[in-house]
Length: 221
Image 1 (cartoon, rainbow, N blue to C red):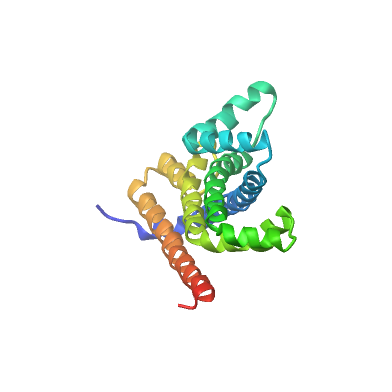
Image 2: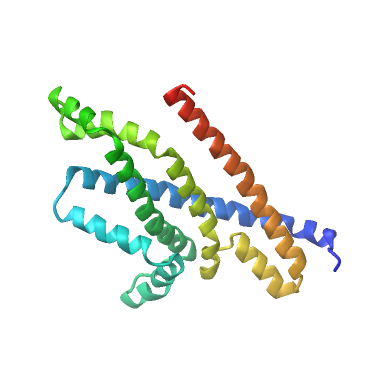
């Protein structure tokens, strides 16, 4: 087997574009998932009737159905009721649906990890439950959940590969497209693998470093 490096270099710009699309989809999904997780955790904290049950149903639905099925439902089923989404919007929406479910549980567990003594002290000082959540509970919960949050962010970034199923031109779609057109399987798979390693290894080290720095700031060791 011979590897045509000149051919690989020729295709490199297309792969960089695919990497940019991967980050765009993942970045949007991570931001929206975090917002959904915070909102749902607040609903659970305030124990809002009906909405609390709706959040629990949503979390179970998000965590117990495959992302690919969620993606196909949005892309192929919604047009039957007059709702048509682009591949990009579908990918972000599906990943937000999945990520929001996981991040809801992560943030909820962080909120519940804050000692009841601190909550009782805050209430005794005259704080409302809203002020208690904003100034006492949520800052501590976010620090507690940092490792789990980062793990879920990496998870969402990896899951962007399913977006290729609805023709979003991310890395995997770029790879399979060139293989189908030009039959250069080895070169394309090698480029895809190297590119994913270049993305995930530094990102993993970076998030690990940030996590250690935040823990050092929190606990002093």
